[in-house]
Amino acid sequence: MIKIEINKKLHGANGEMDLNVNLEINEGHFVALAGKSGSGKTTLLRILAGLESSSGVIHIGDEVWQDEKFSLAPQQRKIGFVFQDYALFPNMTVEENLLFVQNDKALAKQLLEVTELSELAKRRPSTLSGGQKQRVSLCRALMNRPKLLLMDEPLSALDPAMRTKLQNEILTLHKEFGTTTIMVSHDPSEIYRLSSRVVVLEQGRVVDDGLPKEVLLKTDGSQKFSFEGELLELIKVDVMFVAIVAIGQQLVEVVVSPMEAKELNIGEKVRVSTKAFAPTIV
Picture (cartoon, rainbow, N blue to C red):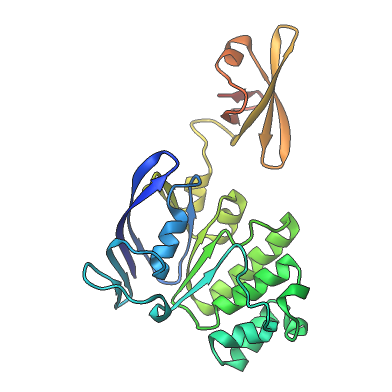
């Protein structure tokens, strides 16, 4: 069991706020951290890694990583950290990047085989694509068989096809190594595909915590689907209006009444839902 009870004052976009998180996580689980930018997700990862200070306690199994009088140094915490920017050593080959963490050639070979990087073992990072670099970063994070794998939006810079491929590889490695994983992500499909639990932060506090299906599927009553998007334009057509809404990578049109149109403002977040065949926008 992983026990996290931490507090830290942060200066966010809306002024000073308290990052106040109290969580218990079962070992071997895959937890997604979600929430708006500035809610404290990355800071929480850095606190777990020992890269930032906080008050409170962090227990990993029977090990104390932090309490009110003691904080274990980052290099002594058995963690793997996957950053957005890969953070590979440019003067080392792929294999050398892995062996720098742990001189275990058998493990390095296994990880490179699982991620289909064996043929690139002698290449340097500058010759690799973004997807290949991120796979190397993931392999390197697992080289010390971490008790806790931390990932901060690791796939945000990749195209959709590569993201899906690496999501599958992340899930395979997570299951094979039995590592407890905590990942920051803004992508609902990624969260749904990978995680067994979703924790949502808002202004430094946990506002939702549950199964991906419970947290991500926001429908009420008899609604059949519900999507959040950005209102781009309102176009008057005869006596009605057509709302242009960006949902993910797609634009959709929704017919709204003059009364509904008065309540809508260009650029705001809206939720598009339907109860049957007549979509509504609120």
